[in-house]
Length: 346
Image (tube, rainbow, N blue to C red):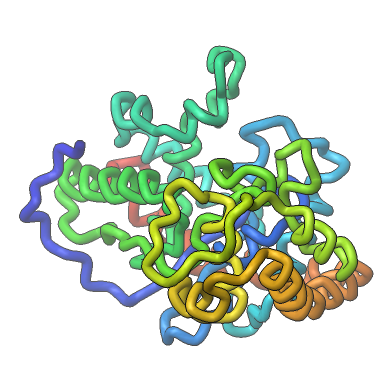
């Protein structure tokens, strides 16, 4: 896919971890298990963590300007409520660091149309009317590459659905390093795909990812749902007429059951095999209440802290401003060096 040589010297800089969540609506259990919970665990990995609110990505589809800032604060509140320490992890709004947009344009001139044509998520998000989609939606994988390379991130926690975009980032980094005779300038970041629930599916359709854009609120557990609502949604979640499987059972034809087992495993920090061993042969009348209790216990403290923070937007704004300044201190010199490498007048 890339024109870069496989013998390009390796990056020798420090480890850095980066990821982000779009500022485009209410967060749900999938965001918590696939991102927030994992971010918090990585905070103690010994590598600096950069966690941004992806508001530039959010506007690839229309966002209500009156709500966008509030959505940004909500994501930041969820980061903190999930256990991220703003003094340890750098939490910031993407748009507050101008270097993201600057580097994205330069990398747009490195990336190739054929690479973007193969991005499956654009096809999924644009649907049958891709000509009505924004150019930003088509090129956002390049902005995503800029987000990562701007901080010379070496590791990126992603779900399976984002692995293709990280491969594109690696291709862009390798091509930049080769085209501009800058061996090892950008790292080739590695994906961190781990855990039993890196892709949480809908409670109503085990073949569809849990999404805040799903018109059915019953398809997801929102981080703002109260205990009764969480329990009711799990009780009504789709399963089948069978019983809980035994360890080793193949669940390809039971996607909803597989999804609930993965959620239980992720919430309890165990494996799917351990969950099936615990509930093997039991009916869902036993399993679903246990899952509901587990979900409520895990999410209630997060929800309470999010509400406290959202009642004090000034506190969130202080975190975001400080994070943006710290992020820019890393990002701006990288863009300056890129401009020099590219040959811009200075």
